[in-house]
Image (cartoon, rainbow, N blue to C red; front, top):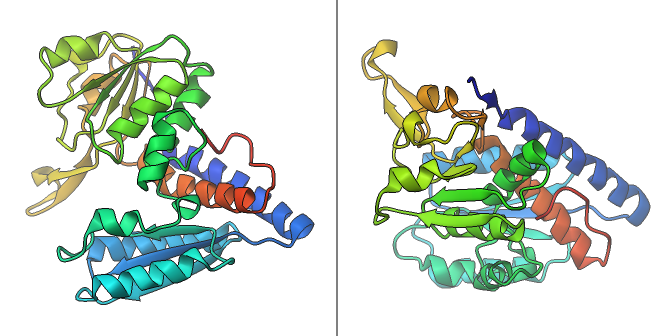
Length: 300
């Protein structure tokens, strides 16, 4: 068996196209332009690249992009004051504070200072609680992207056995909640799980989100299962030359693809969906803030 490759790059382009269409209609029919504010603290190179990409894609779908950069040594009070201003700015419908923050800043305090209705990352404790109890919330972008791809591939997920490997607040836990919401039978596996291989072998859906390169081999995968690989790990690639690296997922792609029915590649799988879903969340937040109908197919 050779798995179908779930092309996250192409799927993300489709999501952005849908978002752009909805944004154009909001402008024409309601005079409303959704706005996303991104706050970057410090000069972390990876964060800078990510923020630039977010800003570029925000503008490309017709939204307003607001970027705020603070020095790495800024005070917590300064950052919280900025967030407070964005919370009350009617032109801003989504707020994202780029993580990680410098060590002297309390990430939980900062995230929970964002208006939950504008928390397009879905990390505010109120949104976590709403998601956990099956209520309308802002949903973390990466798990939302995974759910969209699973629904697109399978249609209904009802009754399927799903194993989520990893219990992070950013991916593992919200992913499990979303799968429960779609009536899957869900197991969360982690570093203390006994007989992990056997647990994974029983899954119709495997979501790997642990940050360990190629941890999941093909012989853990049930024939025909769908594998969603959230991991992005950089490893040495001597075949490319001295000092060269390459990106791999948490699953051993070649062996898993021989057994699975469908699989996301790394790169080009889950990764592109994260920003696409950030834009979708911003559109959703703008619609909710103005009492307008939410876009179909772009929420959980």
